[in-house]
Amino acid sequence: MGLKTAALKKSIWVFHVACSPCNNCDIEILDLLTPRFDVERFGIILVGSPRHADALLITGVCNRHVTPRLIETYRATAKPCVCFLFGACSCQGNVFKGGYNVPRLIDEIILEEDPNAIIVYIPGCPPKPEAMIAGVVKALSVL
Amino acid sequence: MKKTILPIGPFHPLLEEPEFFTLYLEGETVVKVDLRIGYNHRGHEKLATGLTWDQVPFLVERICGICSTSHPYAYVLAVEDLLDIKAPPRGQYIRSLIGEMERIHSHLLWLGLAGHFIGYNTVWMWAWRYREEILDACEKLTGNRNHYAMCRVGGARRDVTQEAMDFTMQSLDSNERSTTMFLGAIVDDPVMHKRLKGVGVLTKEDAIAYAATGPTSRPSGVRWDVRETDPYDAYGASLKAKAWDVIVLEEGDVFAKAAARVLEVLESIKLCRWLIENMPDGEIDVKVGNIPEGEGCGRHEAPRGEVFHYVRSDGSNKPIRHKVRAPTFTNLPTYKASCPGEQIADVALITAAIDPCYCCTERVGVVTRNRRNTLTQDDLVKLSVEKTLEIEKKIGRRSNLAKI
Ligand code: SF4
Image (tube, rainbow over all chains, first blue to last red; front, side):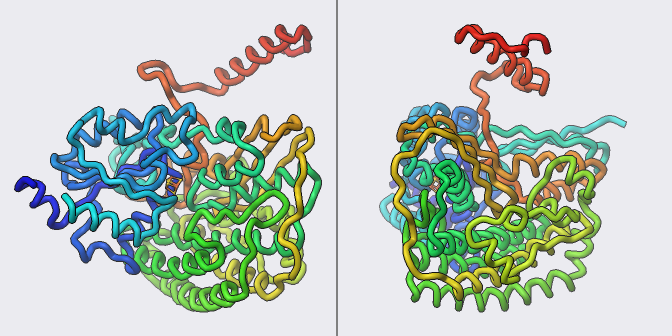
């Protein structure tokens, strides 16, 4: 673990990238910020620009139209960064796998762009907020 | 004066879904708004033709995560229309109950987001905290916080237990208290008045001209609610029992839209209570055999308006055509009537006020880049006519279309 990764783990700032999701994963992510779960107590906040972010929260299946934008956003994020793939859609394509507008999975796209990318999978449709928090904590403890 | 062009999106902190707005400004005033979508298109209609009749509800549920009962609901109504069957009473009541619970949490969600958009995060946090109670009840009733999978052709997929219904009653009680308090807080709050009153007015004529539906048109004075105009499942009986009422307001501004939604939450709470109290016993579904040739339509009043599904069968185990029309499709163009002339700070709020759901609406994805990709209506008509002529040539039949 390098110095940069050690610093990354302190209080992660996240940027939300919705790549053709069904909205539900996104709503559950916003749910995390509200009083019931309140992840801000761990220092996790949503920021307005990928340049400020330590982690990308990616949801959805990533259709043809959004793919170049996802790559652009990934490039704009300061490295090292963690890509959290929320939901069955972003992990393996869910029911949309094989659809004409869903040519590739998100992890393929990101690994093609940067083979050293750190990718964390949090499956579920949608993952429960508790599962999301558990996934983030687990990922940070092994980084 | 020179126009300024301001691009917003596709990934913008204010937009929770990816879409791309272009605002044309004169000073601070918006003169034109342009919208590009297509970031959410996943090809549901095509995917549905590859699944069996009973698998499609799971797919259409994933069109949208917030109205995740509305789409399967309209779909099963369409197939039941094709088959000409009706679900048994208990199945109908269960489906309607879940549909209403969804309306409550969807409206609270919108209210929170609207608060977030005007920079009033207290409203956001409050609304979403109250929404959690409803989600808990949904989890008890169906097993999941969202994506309930309760609709199937011929009835409900799962039964609900008495214990879950009791729990739901408690949640509804406490939610009613908080929503009433909330309504008071909004109506009395001078900040809300200043920000929302008289902003983005959609007149009754415009609402009708744009064929707006649901909580976009009802605050403009259009009394149109599928649950009332064309009752299905348990809604007819509940209307007869006067368990709830349709909320119609006159002003048409953002304030009216917000107020209408909060009032609808209270009506839905009443309706949910009535449904639980009058829940009939018995079977929850009927057995469905082969689906014969034919076509069917189903409509459901989703939280955002009327959702419409059309299915066609050729007698096999899969639909050969499945068409979805989501409420946002007709609600969205109303920004053309309500945005121009407003301040730039209000535009986000006005477009948000129709509660747009782009993932329901998107039907086209742009594949080739750097080519003209705006199709006008004339282009579409031309494409359509050409296709008809091509098919005519193939099957060797002539209609009088070529003359047009
Ligand atoms: S994983 Fe499920 S909830 Fe999340 S975006 Fe995909 S379909 Fe929606």
